[in-house]
Amino acid sequence: MRKDTDRSCMAGDNGQKFFRRTVTTFLAVAVFCLSHPSLLEAGEPRVIDIRLGSYYIKPDKISVKANETVTLNITNEATLIPHNLVIEAPEADIHIKVDVSAGKSASATFTPTKTGIYKMSCAKKPPFGKSHKEKGMRGSLEVVP
Image: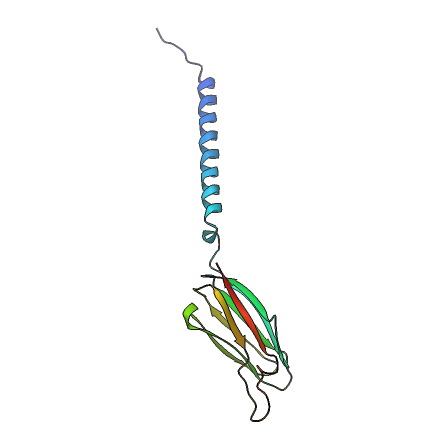
């Protein structure tokens, strides 16, 4: 004697189990990704635009995260005077010295490794008079956790 089984009920139970497993897996992946946000970053550096001029650095305060890759796009807005951007902090693995001719642009990429506040400035100095830094071309880079 053959027993016929109503397969539509089993399909319903299997469908519910599949749905529960799918939702549970999705939630587990979502929780993991939210608790590890650095994994979601595609490795593209953060880009910060900096403008140099007579005699300023804008913005003069920059904040970045430790171990975050950063690209500084530096534009010299002056029409005649060359400038540079210098950020030297060996303890944080920051070594930037970029010369930028008048009206030109350049870039520098770095990954700071230690929190702190570091000085940035233009290190140009004419043969007479005050240096660009003394005339106001200075600022700070803050590296936060």
